[in-house]
Image (tube, rainbow, N blue to C red; front, side):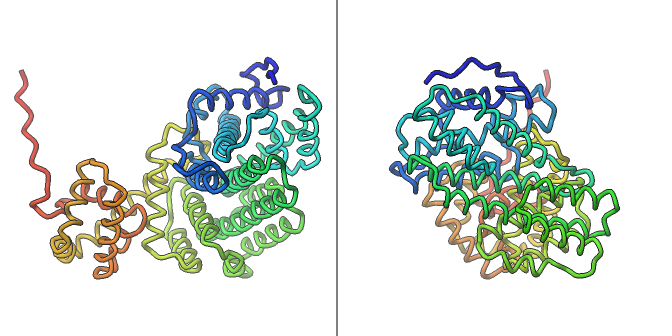
Length: 453
């Protein structure tokens, strides 16, 4: 099936922009391959699901800001439009990777992506029409493209919100949508058709994630002070823009009003609905991002995050590791499209974390050094990693096991045994006034610079 010639520079609101974007995504997929390395497993649902879990994080969709070349493709557009187009483009690339990983037979990929986007927008009748028309009509009627374009344009408005006065809901909304879209894509390409029941189930989970996040972020916004009238209006408008089912939207709006008036704390009630480890991580990571929206984090906000982690059953070590991941993502991707001001705040968060752990290390230095000396292999592995050498999978496993042993004797340093702990330890070694590693494993002093001339 040949694609119609479409102006690839068309902006939102101009007919044909979605076809152009999907054509570009398909072309990039053919030329560049998958967004990240595919798992070495045989094609199938399991392989596609494993890939989806990784790509949502590594692509930046978890943070609402795709860290891919697709963001630069729209450099001439307004910031909100640029970000939205990069998100949809990355959705398309992920779905194309999923098609390959499930072993789906060749097909009209662009039109299949259109069906998936229609399902994501809740346009189920349009999605079914697209599937039927694919069998009998070539090309698809323009009316089907126009309907999905219009539905996506409406969603674009809800993604940006008003972070200057409201909540940083964009990141969580993008991630919830990406997770639902990816799950539907896995099932679609594995089955060869859309299953209405499964689509509805994933969309319901997506809406619940957004609702809980909105309630938690509203509570965060009220942690320091009662929001102004302008901020209240912005928050309520953002809740409306999430386009949740009526009953769910009413619950979230009432929770927000209660938080504004401080009549009661809704946080415990909200968290009782959070059971899965994935959902807990989602809420905590997005709250960390929300705390960075104004470029600073106050003491009440920090206390709120700590209380949230405790209510979710997340350890201080895991919380610190999550903060490290968030700060590191924005440190590495400052050139990525970002409508908000979280980049500066993420740098501050990284510094806060390093200062806290540095203080703990200095107070426990003697015990740390003794433990490292007694665990000879751990010292060797840390030295190898600190010098920039790659560790094998088995070396990483042994190092993690030995870090856990160290953490058992020095509970304050349990963060080093958490995921990402190695990278934090290496980062600390570069800012502390002493070397964490035993002297026999320290790098040799570099030769002094030669005299000029």
